[in-house]
Image 1 (tube, rainbow, N blue to C red):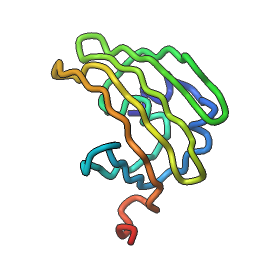
Image 2: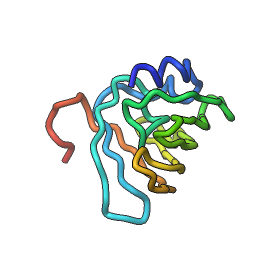
Image 3: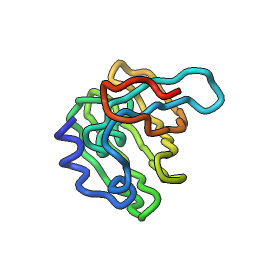
Length: 121
């Protein structure tokens, strides 16, 4: 995911996101997943991890970032990351996955500690 973060560059709201384990819960669903965030820029391509993509920043504010990205034949997307309060974010993402499926999903993200650490109680 280093290529994606480097391409996006340092963005306002991403600077406030702690590195470590985050628990993401899909809004309106019981579905969730834990993600080890080594570089907050990786959240931009939440459904395209590790894929090299071109980025275009639409909004770069202290509390919100919106980036559109294109991964060529591996899909594309648009993601908004909003800081809701310390240790919590909202992630809204839509586009086409690398295998051609559309997605339009919102997540609530909660910082959960160091990567590989025990689950929060």
